[in-house]
Every structure is written in C-alpha cells, then in structure tokens.
Length: 405
Image (cartoon, rainbow, N blue to C red; front, side, top):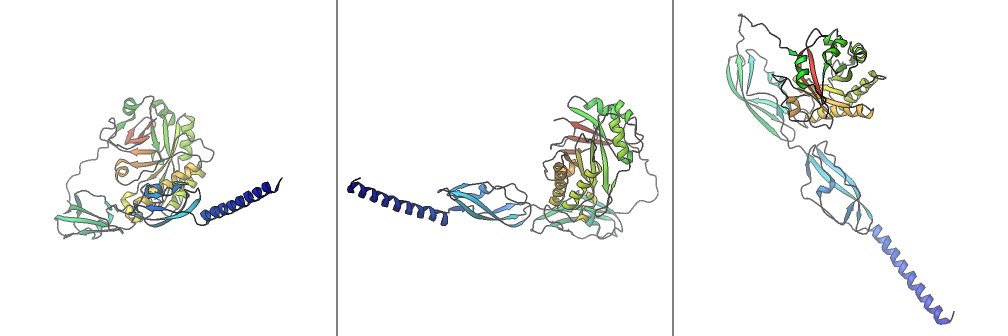
C-alpha cells in the first residue's frame, strides 16, 4: 500500500472515530437528557368509580405510551401515578400523572312522600330511614321543619342528606302522626299461593329451567316428589353469619338437602346469607363457604345474599362499600374455580347496587308471577315468588327460573 492510500485510510479512520465518538455522545445525551413533552387536560378530576384510562387525559405527547394504564378511581382523594412512555427517539421515559377522584353524587334517602308514625314515637325515629351515600359512610341525615310527635296531624317536612363532599339531597314528605286505633276487629290474614304447576306450564322450555331455593325453613322435603312435579334445580343455603361480627353457622338441613337433591337428580346451586360490613369479612365468609362444600359437586352458581337494608344505617357502610364487599366474596369464589352471582331485589338493584360484572339472581314478586318481570337489567336467575305451593313441601317456598342465555 503506497503512502497516499495510507493517508486516506488514516483520515477515514479518524473521521469514523470522531463520528462514532459524537454519535456515542448523542446516544448518551438522549438517554441522559431525553426529550419530554407531555400536555394534560386542564381538568384532572374524575368522578369516583368512573372507568378511565391515562390516554384520555393526554392532549400532546412526543411519543407513545408503553401501556395505557387504567386509572384507580375506587376511592376519592388525590392520586399519583408513575408511568413510562417511549419518546420520538425511542427512549423510554418515566413520567408522572397526578389526578383527583371526586364525589359528585348526592346521597339516597329510601322513603316515599308520606311517612306515618304513632303518637309518642321516639324523636330519633328518622334515623331508621335508610340514608346512604356512594362514598360517605356517615352522611349527615336530618329533618328540617316543625312537628310534634305527641300531637296527631300532618306535618310537611324536608329530609335533608349531605355527604362529606357537600353533595346534598332534599326530599319533601309529609309526616303523619296518628293515634293508634283501639279495639275493633282485624281482618284475618289470607296468605297468597302460587302453584308451581302454573309457573312450570308458563315458563318451562328448552331455554328456561324451573326450580326452588331452600333453607331449613322448609323443614322436611321430599325431593323425589319435587322431581316428579318438574323441579329441575334447587339453590340451597349453605349457611349464614349470626351477626356482623359473629361466627358463621351451617344451615342445619344443608347436608341432608344436598344429598337428597343429588339422589333425585336435581342440579344444585348454593347461597350464603351475609351480615358482613367489609371486604375482609366477605373474603373470610367466602373461604368459610368453600370449606363447607369441599368434595361436593356444585352444578350452578353460588350466590352472595345481603338483605339487611332495614338496618343499613347501623352498618356504617357506603353504597360502594356494599358493592365492593359483594365483589370480594364473588372474586374469592372465582379464584377457587366456582361461579358466583349476586342475589338482590329489583328495587335495590335499580337504586343501590352497582354493576359488579357477575351474574344476577333477581328477586321480584309481581302481582301476577306468570307475567315476566319488568326489571330492565341483566339477570340469569329470577326468584318470582315466596308463596310457592308444591307437592313435597308442606309450607310456602320460593320459586325460581334459570334463563339459559
């Protein structure tokens, strides 16, 4: 190689080295000092419980998110989120998003336009009226107006409920203070009856099964006669808690009912009657239920049944607490391979429960149970009466439908 070629080679190598040096500096600089340009919306408040993703609040970004994060809106307050995005130089950049979850929903008061109490009722009677909020466990619920519980009459009042976020509900109603009647005759109670045969004839087809739900209240049950009458499934109470902080007890007929239902060839589902007031208790209750059914073949879902709304104020729960509690129970079942569902009445589903993402066992007793329920939401099971009559059970029983969707 002559001297001129060597010179050219040396110059080329020098230029290449300098180029690589500066390229290395550039690469180092874009990693040490990456380009960052992120512009958020001006309003970074999100209503509690609302589904939201990070991308919905980004107006400009010099790159792309590595993951479109679902924002946590379970509880109100200030939230801080750290995330990563890849900028225009393909450098991963760490950034932060601060947002506030707020409550914009007014409390709920469960009462009509008229409320009647006898003369001499305790001054705190209104505290028994269901007054609940989506997030506040102890909303301020009080009466506005003048009334005298010692004097019969009609008193126009205002029931006012205010939550911790300042959301207010005002419900106008008339307080009727009455003098209890003494003596006289009382019309004898005539129990209603819904014949299982009528329900079976009306609804049974290839897409609708007809069954019953049972607990020890039903006493002696002839499951073979139930089968012969057309019963296709039963939903059995496994047990219940004896109080919010008390132990759980197995329904004294559960084992007997389960064995005889299986022997009769009936499909079996289950339910747990809860008095819980927290997610922790719901998880413990679900695990307790799972222990009771070890080794048993369960054909249908297991329901979470919480009905103590007449004492709801005493539980010091928000409505979201209630739904979170049910979800915790049902998720625990799901984690162990069982299918869960929520049992609830039509009116409470429409006003108090949130959508949980689990099947619903609807309780709704129309005047004529041979006419389909007016409930507009989704459900897979429908408890249509509590006065069912069928051969094999001496007293009234709940009749249910299972819709094969």
